[in-house]
Image 1 (tube, helix red, strand yellow):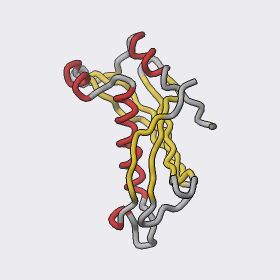
Image 2 (image 1 turned 90 degrees about the vertical axis):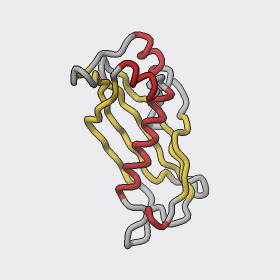
Image 3 (image 1 turned 45 degrees about the vertical axis):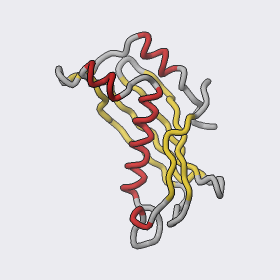
Length: 142
């Protein structure tokens, strides 16, 4: 089992917050999306490589669990790992953590499908791709 890797780090600014004074949903989604692209890059799916191959990823499910409000000034980071690798899909799991409080602010699970952008259809992972992704498998319960 691999270890989580850091995929995003930021501070909660006023423009991240709603009229109730805490970070709003759209910014959680954006931060988790950025973290997922870093996770995919760590798996070897860099932007440059995918452009050459004409491939990409298509998200099919996003699940976010909000656990602790994050007000303006909160420091947060996201750590990520892979929980499952299918023939054409990968499941990423992310934890947003406030290092000052130790609270897990939110978690995200994203399922995405490897995609041939020219044929507009899913594409199977090679054995080498699977090996790179499986090296980042984590226990989402820990």
